[in-house]
Structures are given as C-alpha cells and as structure tokens.
Image (cartoon, rainbow, N blue to C red; front, top):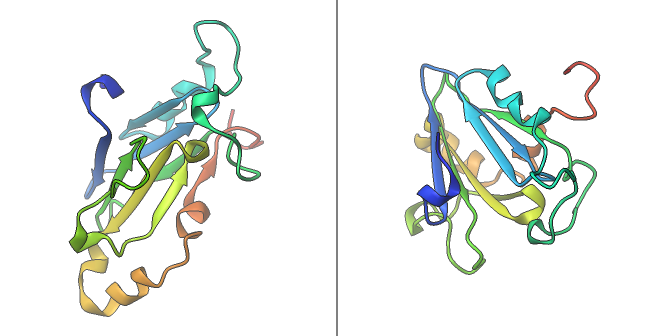
Amino acid sequence: VTSSLDAQRQLVLAARGQTMSIAFYPRKGLICYGSEQAAVKAGLNYDFPSGNNTASSVLGQSQGDIDNDALRLDLDDLNGEVLVLDWSTSPEVPVVSPPNAHLPQYQLMNGAVRAVLYQEASSNNTTKKAVADASTTHLYHRLTRLTRNRFIR
C-alpha cells in the first residue's frame, strides 16, 4: 500500500512484460494502480469518510465531459511504457527533466495531476518525431471510462 504521504509530489509506474493499470477517481481524490484491471475498480465502491461523493475544491473544476468520470489507463506492457504522475502545486516546476521535456504533458483529475507517458518503442529515432508531434489528446483516447460505462459494473 502506498499513499501520497510516501512521496513528495511524483509517482512513476512502468509496464513491460506484465500489465499495469491505473484508475483515476477525480471526485474522490483517489488514484489506484495494480497489475490486474479488476483491482483498480476498488475505488468505485469507496466513499469519502464524510459520506459525500463530491469533488473537493482542492481538486479544481471540470474541464470537459470526462473530467469527473472514473477512468482507467492500461500501460503498454508489450512495447514497454512509463507513466510519471505529478501532483505538484507549482505548475512552473517541470514534471520531467530537460532531456524528456519534449514529451506531451496531460492534465488529469481535473487538473490536479499532470501526467507524462514515455513509450520504450519511441526511443528509436524513427518514432521519436511522431511521439513529439503527437496531439495532446493521445492519452485521452486510451482512457477507459469506469463510471457511466454500461459494460463495466
């Protein structure tokens, strides 16, 4: 078990040869991760200790249709992938060091968390330009809704 008290502002998750799933619960201020997709659904039945299920003011405001939904990201375990999650309160502090600063940053959890994805397959020169030119929507097309999804219970 890990909590945000264990890290100052970042968490790095990786997958290669074994699956890794990360679920984001913005209304609850909760991020779950594990090597089984079903394990990260644990937050669906979790309530705030106070009993209410609304986003706190610390989590910011919704920026889009999916921002308040619980979402799951499955890392690419076949090609290898690394995800850096940063919950720094200073947006001017870079998420990753300068050699990787060209990688797109994504806002998750209503802007409370910044994410950077690095794919091992992109480390060769032929695909590096494609990754650098990737739209900032790339991550959002890979997210699976856990709430408001009739196929997940």
